[in-house]
Image (cartoon, rainbow, N blue to C red; front, side, top):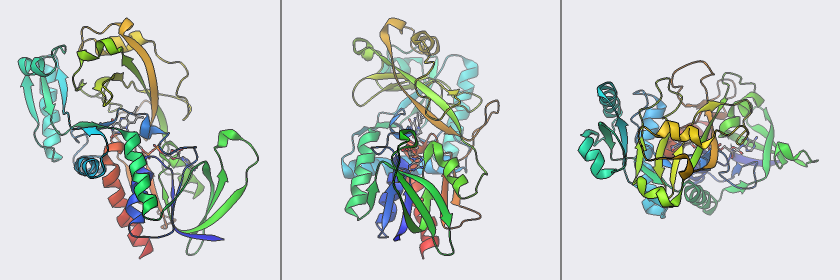
Length: 378
Ligand SMILES: Cc1cc2nc3c(=O)[nH]c(=O)nc-3n(C[C@H](O)[C@H](O)[C@H](O)COP(=O)(O)OP(=O)(O)OC[C@H]3O[C@@H](n4cnc5c(N)ncnc54)[C@H](O)[C@@H]3O)c2cc1C
């Protein structure tokens, strides 16, 4: 049977960042992805925003990894020529109550170590975003945008240059812990393909679960049923090219009070398109990207208070993505990332509930995972 030091399950941005970090130090690293290409899950179905870290409760992994990840991401993008733009963003308020909420958000951000935050008035908003209606806004200079696809390709290339093996169309179907390794059994292709498949097993000294929406199911293969992922779909619309001048950078409303999402925002992408979204609704299936799409009028309703000129005729439906939420429907609050060695199978590292800001945090998460892997492989 083949042997590996590390098997990473899941080739999204987190798995790729982890592969790059651990393959610097260890040989025989395998990154295993069930789909034909890397990054086809949440990692390329998102807003592509490099978040600042203002939203998350101080001291949480989300807050720490987002703030550290933001800095690491800009350094990485510059060093490896990954397309990005440090454009900053505005979180807008319409009345005195909302301005007080902006103040609270700014305080939270400062407590997390986010710098450069300031509340600006209507005239300053108008100077930056002439078509946006707001009484005031929180200016967040460290926010930016990135090409997630290029980031993933670069991380994968660096990993393979360092000797890691990347296997696509390869699905982990069984994990069997032994005395000094875990037997990882793969099958070719995705579950949905359903065809007869050959299976292969590798004995791994360390297994890292970066399976995104399916991370709870991978944990369950090792008997860990502590966490359940509830899929929450976010849908996007795109503004017609003729209207993309309406938005210069990134404009956000205040986040949902229940912690479900950051609210439908306006994102000018690196390709000079403008995205409106994402929405946030629990769905039954983890692959339900397209059923019952919202009408464009719903996006107009949510964005109109920020962008009064927006009309349904200016919008067309775009892609959707699915968040790996740990908070069940009907409950409020922000669940933290789970990143830890499995309590019963300490050779396994579990990463569960890596929803937003997972893209921003990916390089910082990879550093934490590197330290956990070092404990196992020392
Ligand atoms: C709508 C939306 C907007 C977002 N916006 C932002 C944003 O602007 N900024 C930000 O920082 N974050 C954002 N996020 C969060 C970010 O996209 C995720 O946190 C991040 O992509 C998670 O990466 P991942 O590698 O953990 O998951 P994924 O990208 O989902 O990768 C997991 C991979 O594991 C594979 N896999 C699963 N099971 C198996 C198996 N058994 N065998 C082999 N492979 C398997 C899957 O096929 C998948 O490719 C957003 C998310 C959504 C949904």
